[in-house]
Length: 224
Image (cartoon, rainbow, N blue to C red; front, side):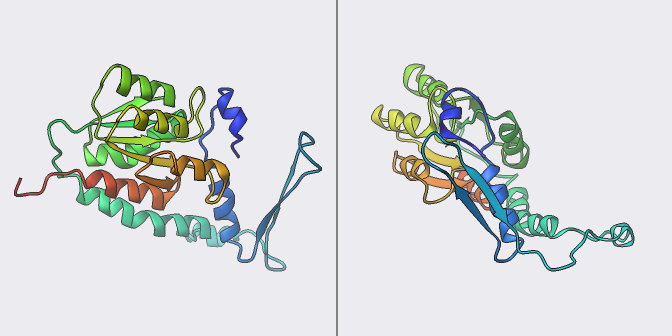
């Protein structure tokens, strides 16, 4: 899982840790997570308590040979199918000639995943910034025009929250969508969503689907 100070010191991370834990817990009924600490500066212990049926075991080799899938795979396929369908339907979209998107993300795996799952399918022209400071430089100093900015939060040098505040203070009027692994209700996410975002989504399949819809909203109508 990500630690805010570690991000500011320049150690990258995908921001997916808490979402992975959440999915594991949701697949096991009443399972839950406990976090204990003896006080500030004394470390913390994270404990997952999984609700497993007595005598549960891995699928037999025979079931695996028959192609039985795990609940995790079934859940991912179920969630991803509508998103993939929506992206395929959007491949013929035409965008205004001046339309351009900026993806601000420090983790190369997340950048490549979004490029393959969304941006290439939508045929969206885009640039990449690896942290908030680079995004601010491109938009406010170099005056590069963007209609849509997809902003991560936990990044080195300048977090998404600070970058978004700087862009809004500099009169940037384009759409800024925050995409973060910070869990709902935590201080970092609340501050990020209050920084001037038009929308905040989580780094998961529903979040990717929402981003697909938001980018598609910039497409020209057929009669145009």
